[in-house]
Structure formats: structure tokens, C-alpha cells
Length: 146
Length: 121
Image 1 (spheres, rainbow over the protein chains, first blue to last red):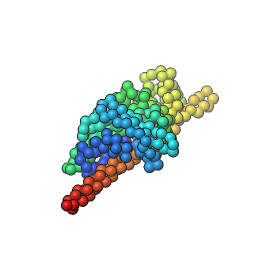
Image 2: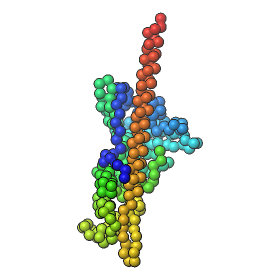
Image 3: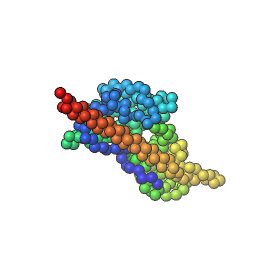
């Protein structure tokens, strides 16, 4: 049985670059287009970023002639500490995730922690029933099963 | 990144404490609907609705023996949900690695430009 973390999807990485540079990379179309939502075989054909709370973004990656849009909305923009946005790929799923990026300066560099939580439409109004609860249930069931 | 649509069903099914309790019980072995309903302070009808949500997600399967309905757990969607989450985690990790590489490359070219400048007249 697969081992599942009880947390939302969480990734941490240390950067030698300063917090401001790492933060700005997410909202700068030139840099963001090189690391966000790109695929090795795809070609980024369009990037729209409206960097304000409530502003939208759209990254279009062309894969095998098909244009795949990655869309979302910025919820919080607190440079250089915190960036929160929703994210979905309508071509693949109705599912919407909420991505939270927290950047903590460390010496000349910084440490970035990214969490991704799912916000399926059914739960949009039930934020208290978060991903944690879901995973708690999942982990419990898996623990019993194994 | 292909997000499976059935995942919506799996995660919705797991979002409710009663349904998680039902899965918990079934993890211990097959059970009749009436047996499943007993610990809950709700009608058989309400419990049946929860069971249908679990069946839609293929987390619960039904076997009929005469007039009796036996329910059992199917763990496969759980494994698939776990695998999907691991894929998501790996995707974000690779995006952060790519960002790190870009910033380092920028630093190197900025450093090279600076050196070149200082060598010049």
C-alpha cells in the first residue's frame, strides 16, 4: 500500500538567490515561462500575468499541436514573503488547486515552501473541510488496510 | 500533467466523516448495509446515500446473495489518489529545481559580464 503524507502536497527548497528575486520570478512572464507549467516537449506560446489580488494568469503550452492552458487567479501577493494563487488545467480536469508559496530569507538566500491543496467545486464553500481532513481520512484508511 | 477526472469522486467521497467511518469499518471485512448503519445515529436511507457516493468512487463494491447485499472496500482508488499526489509533488519539485537553475545561470552570466567589464579599458 502506498504511503501517503497527512499534509497537503508540500515541497521545500533552498535558494542561494535573495527572497525578492525568487519571489519576482513567479510574476515575471519572462522567467515564469521558463520554469512554470512548461514541459520538455512543449512550447510556451502565451503568458498573461496580471499580478494583483484578483488578477488572472494564463500560461499556454503547446504540446503536439494542442494548446494546453494553465489558468488561475492571484489571491495574495505579499512581496517577498507570500504568494497565493488558484490553479487549474481546464483541458484535463475541473479540479482547482490552491497553491501557497512562503519564502523565508536565510542569510543571503532563502527557503521556499510550496503547498498545494485541492479545491474541487463541491468544496469551494467548505474550506474548513480542507485537504488535511481528506488526507487524514486517507491515511487512516490506508493504515487500517496495510 | 493529466489529472484524472475520477479523482474528483475519490476525494469527494473521502471528504465526509461518515463515509470515512464506513470505509474504516469495511477495511475490517465485508459487511451488510444494516450492519454498517448500526453505529450511526442516522436513518438507513441516509447511510445508503453515503454508500452510493462511495460506490460511485469505486471505493465500495456490492455483492448480492439472494436478498442480502454485502459491501466491501476497494482500495485501488486510494492508491491512485496517493500516486497522483506524489506526481504533483514531483512536478512542483522539478519546477523549483528549474527556477533554481535559471537564477544560478543568471548569476553566472551577470558575473561573467562584470569580469569582462573590469578587464576592459
